[in-house]
Length: 75
Image (tube, rainbow, N blue to C red; front, side, top):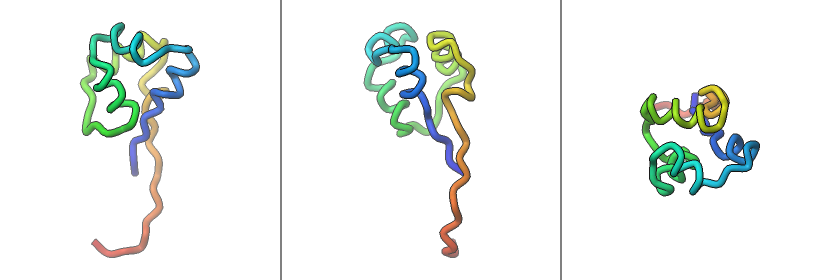
């Protein structure tokens, strides 16, 4: 199972630019970009709460668990 970040979708729905969102929640644009691309290992609940407040959404709107297919190869 993988976790997919849907932050870009929510930003588009709210017509919000990365620069504006980053400033509003108090993180750098670079960190926001890394978060949008899913290239982070974790997110603080405080940051997640600020994102949800700024985008008027729930955590489940930003993060989605996706079942990945088993390739059939042994570990």
